[in-house]
Image 1 (spheres, helix red, strand yellow):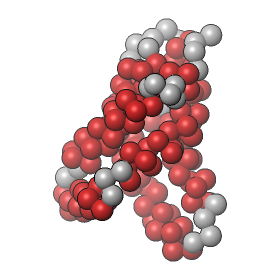
Image 2 (image 1 turned 180 degrees about the vertical axis):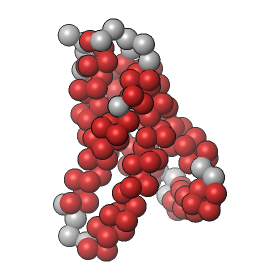
Image 3 (image 1 turned 135 degrees about the horizontal axis):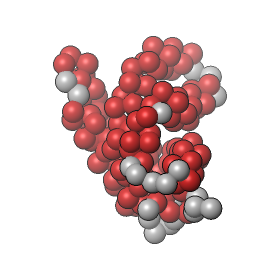
Length: 148
């Protein structure tokens, strides 16, 4: 059996590098956005980073174990099928993978008692799925870099 992702991605010595690469992934994905919604996303992301430079890396580190758990079955199946690119594997299953990953934030929102937060999240969920799907090639590359 292939080693579990948590052994490679969540190893104490690896976490700072994984967080750094995931933040670079997010930076690149936000940077690639265009149009009015892209401009709004870039502005909001820049504001968050300016207000608290550690907000994004802290959020990544806090959510990383849950995301790794969601990616684990895909990694095990990918490894069992003989390789290639994990990015291509994820992209071929984009709807399923994106819904699984968004399950992490869905669960957090579900546990919130703040109706306003739930309402905003609900209105953004569909566009979030689109953004997660667009990020799958980069995500697959980051996972494969550390897990291979």
